[in-house]
Length: 424
Image (tube, rainbow, N blue to C red; front, side):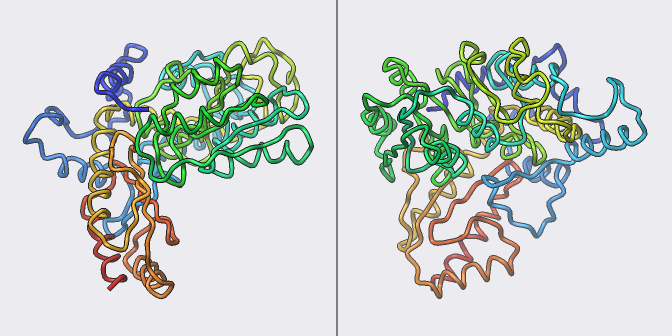
């Protein structure tokens, strides 16, 4: 999905006009952001601005180099404040909307905020604990005839693959996998690879909007439209999409979507999103059941009835959304994509690196993956030096670097200097 300037600007407009109140105005006073006027104009010192954001809004110590936002993001101080505030008020039973619990409420206002942001109706959106849970609800509850084929790619996260493997092990479905080219030549090549793999028995196509191991942005709309023409349901694992790239579910054409706000949308760990297209809600089965599991008037909220849960995390998720909207989708994407291009440029210079992320920067957002051609001793030395220098990224010879607004250009430089030292 290529990110156009028009799409980014429109998403920015959504985020600054919700509910008649500016995103900046919804921030607690002690977490107000520095002035960003002119950020997109020539001459603006973006590095200095984002260094201020890191220092003032996050609890990251100056010596920490964090390049693994793709695994779990870092919550800003206002999100931590929101979680603690709810827990404090709950402990004192000083809660405006009743007894302090979560698990049975439909949380209509919270879902409305998130639905507006991701681009769907509130009836189609449920709040889960993470994308893994959402994907398990999708795979486990989808009505399929015995032996129906589910098609996935070879770049799916285990959470996008293994719920289908469970159904396969039970004898419900057959599972088939298509290999994606690495690196791909173009979005058209990716679309053709996936679409051409759809067979006469395929009933479901499940794939990542942004692949977890390599960070490729998939041509979602083209794939979903082609699948729909063939009568195939589409599932998009969007764990890396919500907050990383400007996106709207209603522009994807998919039937199901799973999201993880705790990666890129500044939310605390333990919250996720589940989207089911309206015309598929009533036929879908829950995988966790309690009272009103069959109350179809609840629409997507029927899939939120897990039992008692930690409502404070959901308050933190909304605070993370406030923070993202105050910064602005276009500003966030411009920054993190600029840093990702810098990572790509630094990595491309190295003779012992194979690029798995394509040179076309429209095909990645903030995730860049490389393959290191180093022997075991040099790899061990690299990770030892990273530990000593407080550098966090993914390990192994296949290395994924992910940047966010709290990432400093000097963080990237330190990592590549450390890599050069280990490879010498």
